[in-house]
Amino acid sequence: MAFDFYKLDSQLTEKQRLLKQQVDEYVDQIVLPSINPFWEKAEFPRDLVMQLKHLPIMGGVIKDFGCSGLSLLELGLVMKELAKGDGSLATFYGVHCGLAMGSIELLGSDEQRERWLPSMASLEKIGAFALTEPNHGSDVINMETKARMEGTEYVLNGHKRWIGNASISDLMIVWAKDGNGDLGGFVIENPQQTKGVEIHDIQGKRGLRAILNADVHLKQVRIPIKNRLPKVKTFVDIATILKLGRFAVSWEAAGLAEGAFEHALAYAQKRVQFSRPIASYQLIQEKLVEMAAEVTAMQLICFQLAHQLEADAYSEGMLSLAKYHNAAKARHVTRMAAETLGGNGLLLENHIARLAADAEAIYIYEGTNEMNLLLVGKELTGFSAI
Image 1 (cartoon, rainbow, N blue to C red):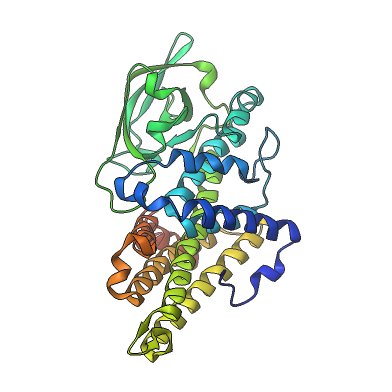
Image 2: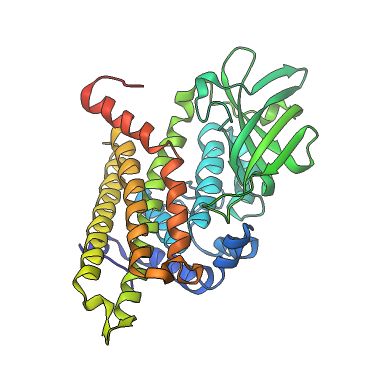
């Protein structure tokens, strides 16, 4: 069952409906039957993830180089449907196809795109995006990681944290400041085998446990000059990448909520207490209707934001409001879904506990909800509170 109370799927083309169906089938037949043990053990489900390459989604919105060339609406639909199955899976896809491949496509040279994108589109090589630092988060102005030129190489020194895919990556884009104070994107190939790179997966996460996030220490790491992305000098140059990140995470949050609601509704219709399905009781119906209303609002925001982006008629505040609203509502809906199942809502086998834990992580990343709130506040009032 796919929840679509306001018939938004009627706006989709036949191609878009088929794409959505293909991702749905992958989630139902491959992800849901096998993801829980990986999530519980905090293991990356490589075999499961590698089957993504059989779907027409790799490379996201990138055209050519073996990529799928999705529209923004199609990218959103893919993120939502993947997240209905598992937040870690959707996050892997967003990091690899959006942040890593997107950086190379938008900011790399023709030679770099030809060198790296085809093998990333086929999942022969996995990408990581190393921006966040332990002391500054994504505050690029105060970034401490540095790159200095020595002969025909750059030498990188610094510390990155919460880097998704780092320990399994074949290409890691490290963001650092050069000797002129300019921002640069530096591609480390085979980082696990590169001298001076230390990668330690972060343990003890309570959300997104099936994607690996790492601390990355860089000590005198040497890379060739040709591995610097040439089309970036300031934060403005990578803003488009991060913009698409907020867009994708808004859809991801909607997917987590939609998935949890669908599980809760199906359970309530089948679970019998006091000789009646619990869906027939007023208090359960109250929860179901409130969840349905929130999920519908999230879907409407996502669809409209996609249309605004495709028409180039968006603002930064629109992106931040979508992330702020949907991340907060994903927390709320997944918690209510768990409550609907009572004690069974705590069990991974019913999937909602995992989706709820992942919703907590979504609330924090791609800009905390507090930061996105303040960005919307600035656009509304004209005053920056940051």
